[in-house]
Each structure stands twice: as structure tokens, then as C-alpha cells.
Length: 219
Image 1 (cartoon, rainbow, N blue to C red):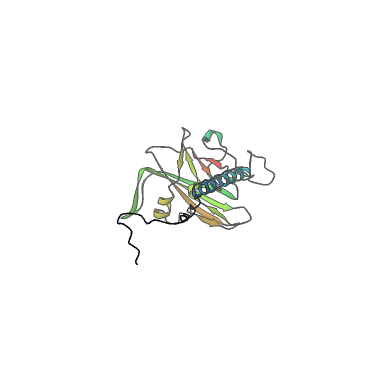
Image 2 (image 1 turned 60 degrees about the horizontal axis):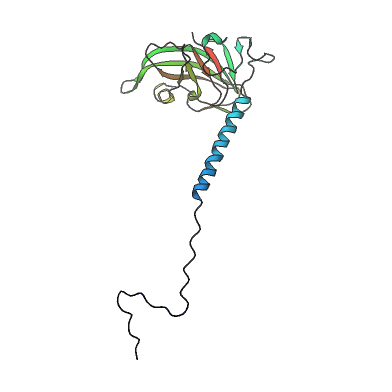
């Protein structure tokens, strides 16, 4: 005799012990892992900032005290917002920050556009070109970046460098991620896009993003 089928729309009847459902999968800890990773990156950034600012200010020549001048060079260690009146270095004077010695050789304000013909760019305001000789005075190859440099005005405002315009429209700018070996020098051009009529008072030159910087008066 055959077993009658289950009625339609009715769940099957189990006899004896019901089947045990499979265990629930463990909760994912992805959110906690992301927070831990972010915390590690923040901690590393803080350590890098502290370490970068602690030993980048060096004297310009042997036996020179910090903040003094000797043989046409001055020490690093100036801070952001330093005006030209607070600096003792000017165009043609060597300053040092970290592994680099800097000499500003020329400043060209009021430049409306860069490049030639169809391969050119127009400034939002006007360009200021600062030409600087960068020498590696350290013991290993070091990367120079125009993007780490800052232009200052009489109001204490800071202007970032326009690295894209420098590398695209200034031939041989030598200011975009240029690795310089010990003892070598490059003639770099750092480009800034500033309001029309602005007269720059100083430039703050940096070995790296987190270095103390050395300020040169452009007035």
C-alpha cells in the first residue's frame, strides 16, 4: 500500500527529532578592522610630523649659531607666516633646511600666462615665478618638490605652489619630484598663482612637507 502524498500547501510532517538548523555565521569585524587601520595611519602621520620637524633645521655653515648669518648664508628654522622684516636672508643669500641649501636667484611677478600658442595656460590671477638653486648638502639622495614651498605676502597669507603649471608649461622647471644626489644642484623654477597686483614679500623654502623651513625675503 503506497503512502498518501502530503496535502498541498502543507509543510511536511517530521516524526521524531526535528532537524537542527545550521549555526549562524560569526559577525564580521570589518568595521572594527577599518577603525584600527585608520588609527594606525593617523598615528604614523603624527610620528612623521614630530620627527620631521625635530631635526630638519641645520646651520648653514660650520660653527654658525642658529638664527645668525655667516659667509652669506643663514640657518633654517623659520615658521609659517614669517614676514620679510623678520628674515635676514634675501635674494642671492644661501639658506638651509634639512638636506638642502637654497639660493633664490630671481623673482618674476605679474606673469599672465605660461607656455606658447595652444600649449599654454592662463593664471587665475597672475603667476609669480621664483627661480632658486637647490643643492643637496646631505649624505644621501633627497627628493625636491616645488609643492612643498610657500609664498608669503604682507598680510601673512600663505600661497601654495602650482606644481602642475610648472611641470607642464615651464621648460626645465626641475621642481617636480626631482631626486638630487649628494653634492648635486638643480636650477628650479617654483610657480605660484596669486591675486593680480600682489607683491610677494618672502618665500618659505622646505626640504620636505614637514620640515621647519627657511624664509628668504623677496622685498
